[in-house]
Length: 195
Image (cartoon, rainbow, N blue to C red; front, side, top):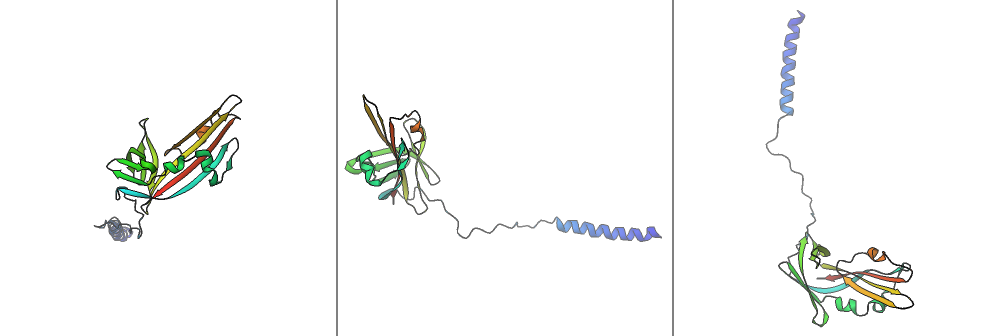
């Protein structure tokens, strides 16, 4: 008698279990998509504009690195770099295909092969490597980086000064190597802002 009651109970239990499994494993025809962000951040289009004009210069660092580190006032720029920074300031930047032309005061020009990686701008150097040069911001301003240094080594017999600038100079760290007590190093890091 017990077996007679157990069989219908098992049959009903099995049917209930199967229907539960089938409804739990049922796939909806259309999967739910996550809601899109109402204000997505859009990468700037680096080729949306071919010509950029000079807007301003922003100095990030101007400091004595050696023999001891100390910040320096902007008024001393010409003492260490002469007119180099003024003459390097772009008046206009033009893009055409995979090249950039940087127009500077007195008809000076620089031309480089360039490539874009999202909003980042890279130029092709003489040593056949790509170097970071700047970027297009979301407000569509072009920002070109410039690093410069003045390295002086003085002894009783001589004085040697090297002044250099480059779009890919980002840190004075490599210049510190091999320096001694007679070495003076002034570092400048700035950005030209174009629109």
